Image (tube, rainbow, N blue to C red; front, side, top):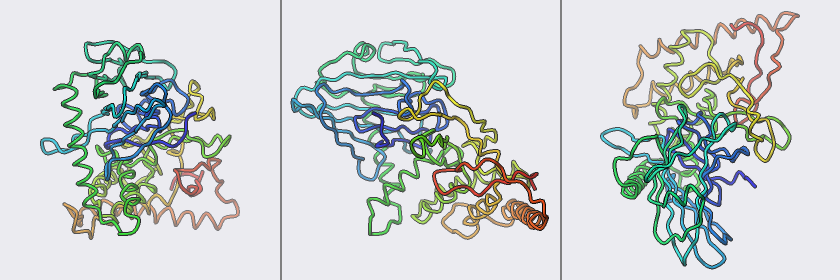
Length: 418
């Protein structure tokens, strides 16, 4: 049965969830809010699993101070394997290399383990399966929106047929864009692993962590970092969609978007740990929102690339987490009017005016840019104050959904936008 005991691997472009048996249950391509090609978390048929014959127990841990996940699977005959998963993220040619790719290595540890590989992918929100196309050392999943290629040094015939074989050597899989790799898959997997390990350790090393509960704080910081879409600086509230708030609630929301309130809390938490790079990227995201709205209405939530239309739809082909529908894609909260959002924009931007650690501290030009947000908030406050004195108060919106994983959002006003 699917559980929420999931490890996370990611790199600021994509993120995948892996359960305690080393099964990928969730992966969206080509970015956080893309098509869930692996969707077993919501009852779909897309996934990537390593099946050990006679499996009995598993142990799952992160490599210290990284987002590299290791899962040890043991069998009743004493054999054991290690599954190492990560998404490459490191500096290459002066920039952060963070492709829409994941790497999986499977290493025999004891005995003569017998394994099989299950690999399938879905599109159209679980409505259909993406067909496999075999290559010499790869398998292609052709789709114009979310297509990808899995290159491997394992026997491709065994993978396609899900046939059991003895794992007598380490094997590797690189899932990424549908294009050839530049080198041998084993060489690239090892190289990317070491460079990704170094990158995460260097990032964690610079954190200003308290002496108490240091391991937990570092792990929490890495998890928050994995929610940042680094291309734009947008920060998602969560990496998943439609995990119910509780059994039978039908409060199954898609959280793969950037709520400005929640993003402010994330940035604040990371900034207190001296992870100022996230703040700089988020400030760029905020500047673009303010420029886009030109002193007008600011939504409480945007897409990770500043999308404003987050039309909410129900995917009827996916049964939902533990058969608890509905499964939703998109979020109607983008239509809400929440006046506290202006304060969170200002609070999020305020750090740029006095933090000398930033590469470019904000000045008069930036002040004028964000001043329109304060003016907008003032106008809204004045009109709401005037409206509250009338006997016919403005009606409340019927939408009371939570805007993110946190306390209920400020009530939405259904009166015309101020």
